[in-house]
Image (cartoon, rainbow, N blue to C red; front, side, top):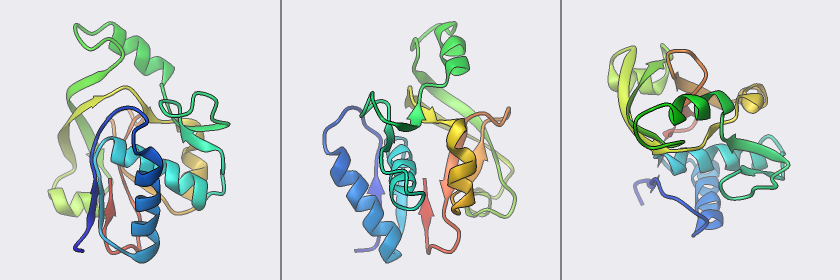
Length: 161
């Protein structure tokens, strides 16, 4: 196996299997690329197994999660509801500012990129400090710094979402 990709998606189908697969990739040093839901579940897996937040989850999957590391961001909901399409869904291309020296910065070769989105849930900013203290790096953020667009694990051969 050369690597693992967990793509975007919606709903509950296969979520625990994806989380288990992400953990396997992280622990065994297998290259991992997470896209949309694949990034969100990588954050969930890291919160559960590295940060020891056993009840960490996405509000999309577990509405009663004690540690909603993936959730609606209230300010974002208001902004999106005022847009002309998608209601609370973030649709289309959005800019991200990449952290200098990060793997994604090296891969793109520039400071600012634009990536397409189709989702409602975001990394909950209330958990950033906890996640980052345990080594997770949010290497791409929205221009205002509120939304986490990319993450990676330094020291892992390739763990990017």
